[in-house]
Amino acid sequence: MSWVLDLPSRGDTSLVAAVHEPDGSLLVADYTSPESVGDVMWLRGQLNPTEIHLYRLGHP
Image (cartoon, rainbow, N blue to C red; front, top):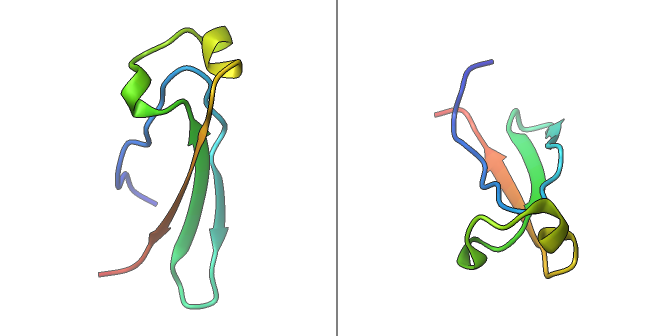
C-alpha cells in the first residue's frame, strides 16, 4: 500500500474505514467538519454539521 491522498480533516473527524471491493478498487469513507468553517476546535465540530466523504480508489 502507498500514499494516494490526504483526507480532509477539520474539527470533528473520524477514523477512516476502508473496504476492498470485488473489482479490485478500495472504498474509503470518513467524516469531517465542513471545509467552509475553517479549522475549528473538536468540540465546536461536534456541535455543528458534519460532512461524510466516500472515495473509490482504483488501479490505473
